[in-house]
Image 1 (cartoon, one colour):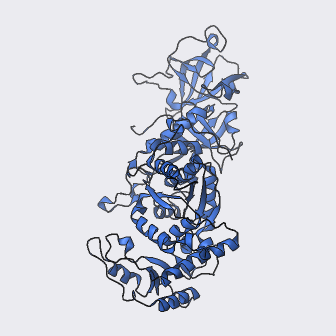
Image 2 (spheres, helix red, strand yellow):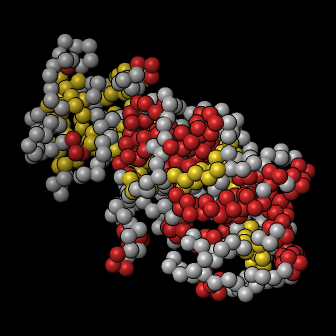
Image 3 (cartoon, one colour):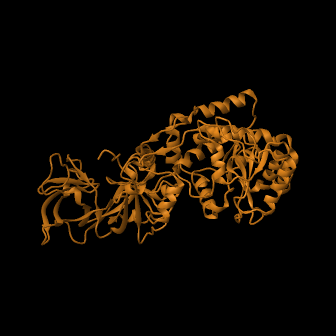
Length: 579
């Protein structure tokens, strides 16, 4: 799989951040001889821009140090998971330009995880607890008060094993009991106050069917899955920093590296026995203003019809960004630019937009399009006149070649490029004024034709024949240049003008009792009918262009067709945040 490379940055020589330094130190000290990472999303929704950072880090660091990265689906909560999300996750990772060493599922390890839980019971490190979920919360204590031991904490090993096996056999209903780690109810870290390791859920699983009615908790399954796969560096976001002691507790207490008998079932499945001791390292999340990143909130937007789906171009999902016209190279460039740190912050969305703008400026072909059309007639040109003009596909890249654009008597121009009463500094077309038509020559506006309502419906102009390409007056100085599309040859196109989904920088702020839904931008999606030159209409889905003087647009990946083109605005030519 190949993708256009992102614009080079200083980071391309040797990227320096605290995670990469840890990896370098571990290799230099001999702690590791090979680097193994993983990207472990839960398939309970679509990936969003925040996941792009995790993907680029885990896959990128593995590649930089000649290691490998697994894609592992953390499918331990079947009530919330769906095969649709699994396929979308795989598609997103590939689209970003990465390939996994091995595709794994937490469910692949259910038998090993179960045997490891029995080992913890036998060691006296886990017990079956009959407290309800509400009672567990009451017993847990607070940040300032220690918790209390469960009344069932001192059950014998034999009783705990019997109860746990009966849990697996399906004897108990959901919520009747849990398997909990026996750690320290007085710990200052609440995650260590006898956390749950297994809960009962009589729910069919997408991979294992009805083979299980007990499922491991995330912290337990995640730590041991990393160990099973021989992951050396388990990279995750900062909210898991307080979970790291529990992660290490699970790895150390089970000690898979010295218990090969626990891995025998995996060997039977054909998986290599790779057990090791992973190291968890946390980094800051990727958060932008004018967005919400919670899967729950994004799902509500979809389910309530407030957006057109998970791939709505206004959504921060990778599917939505892709449909908006974001490129893999632009997202990789973004991750390079923001770097890696331990400091959470809310980034300005202009950084995201700027990465796309810089990527597309370097490689997107130029085309002419008019999205708010006004008819312009060249009165001194014959009615049947047509000429093919040679235009560069990219002004900064000769290798991009040229194209032929038809030029005729009747043209479409942007309505805002004419002013009957021009404001100060206006350099475009006015009555009696001149302007250059991009690549075609200089025109003078002689008349503005109006309808009965007083609206301008047509401009009648004269073309200076001596200013045509190749003529002696072609280089005559003129202040303004505008673009155009030949009316006879133009293709009508649906143009979708997307803006920010929310009207305020922090829609998650609940001040005044308002919900993030109260800040939805009613102008975040406008649809207009415009005209594009034939070479734009012939675009393939997901092909990006700079529509000259307007912005960057992409042919919609779902709805675009050459005879019925649909273009989405990806980003403006310049940052419009201050407007």
